[in-house]
Length: 413
Ligand code: PLP
Image (cartoon, rainbow, N blue to C red; front, side):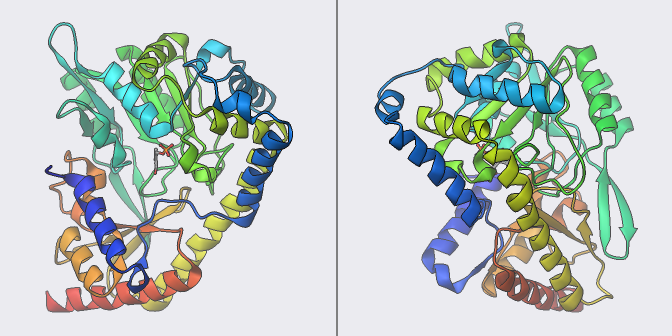
């Protein structure tokens, strides 16, 4: 099978790492670090289930395709108590992870419709999660708007939503079935402001389409946000959550919150393809919400962990990267990744990735996060994603290698 884009690069990374895991410094990983407090939380949930004699009842029965009422009611209660948002059961769907949620949503709302017209999924600001490209069953579904770039100081930059280009695209052709964005953003750690979200949501409302807000890194869990942010719920927003980055990626629990009209479509699809999400995982999440551990551990340990990792990375870059090379780190507003832009990098991100690989350092080249729309631009080829899931020692040693390879590349040009 011909793998393209992010699948090709992820395949390469996996092969390299499997060949000799101890040889490489891996700054590419998306698997969350299993912190001791997080492990204890899930261990306690599982023990409670076993000690209460509930296991048989949970694992030996099919359930509703919406998810268990127990977990759905926990989410309702959490949103009511903490955000003053009143949700009905019909507003919530539990999915088999949020990747699956995007599969259900993008293939329900986008693609070839009854009139044989193709409707697309628009990403309002690139770069964004490479996994959206893979979920569409039809070709040319995902499209994105290039960002505006603001340099903040000698070594920091931030992407901004290009409202003009966004509106131009929407006006040009109303062939859009849904919009999707991650907040905090994977790969760059940007958090779009509430004002920007409401602006995008208004446009979606006029088009009568859903806006999927991928909150895989957002509060209340895993809460890997370094700036203040809250869930935003308007009539056409589908708020998409995941428990994966709070240490439970293996159990596949995603949560969609939105109006019943959207939820129902996705539920029907889910019912056909997988019936429902793991009931054991749902019970564990309900337990850790009922006793308050999940949001507490998220804020106190998970967020702090990645904040510290970001500071280590920044320190390493300041120590090792030469000041006369135009390197810029995206503002750290959230997520478990950092995003480095090497302006005027004399070679493409993929070649740069290969050079780093030769020196036993693995990062993710940035191009695939631009989803083809912008992939040909210079900027898309000058960025790399660096994972904050590594040890401090690996971050330090990795950035030293990165710095040496970067110096060579700029010197040769
Ligand atoms: N959304 C974003 C932004 C992600 O980074 C990921 C995983 O890395 C996912 C969704 C999918 O996560 P899951 O399916 O485990 O919930």
